[in-house]
Image (cartoon, rainbow, N blue to C red; front, side, top):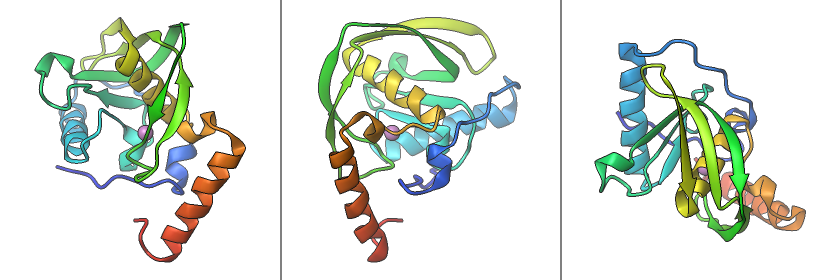
Length: 171
Ligand code: NI
């Protein structure tokens, strides 16, 4: 099923998500399918469980947006091991629709995570994939990309969101 995406302002997005201890359950497999379905429906390249209201350390990424099956990545309890180089680029978030800001990230990151059946694996991503890994891992620590921009820019977004919420356009 497609879950609605939780929007900025909901405390679940700024809370540290809980570690996953049970793997390879029908419930987890179903949840992962639902996460991919929800991400594709929203046309995103990454989605973290808190964004659909579930405070668990699970994220999915697909930089091909459903075009290349091998690009589907499941990160459970991810931990960034290494960050190399720098990149600057525009970033957005499904939970903060309508906004994009330039964010500095590492260019190449290595992450360790569990997969759906509980095996530990490591992978390295560059450029957009590196950005997505960092963005989604941040989500699981309750950190949104706007914590990486200037206070002034963040305040402007906060004010605009407040206005949208008041008008009932932020649900
Ligand atoms: Ni996001």
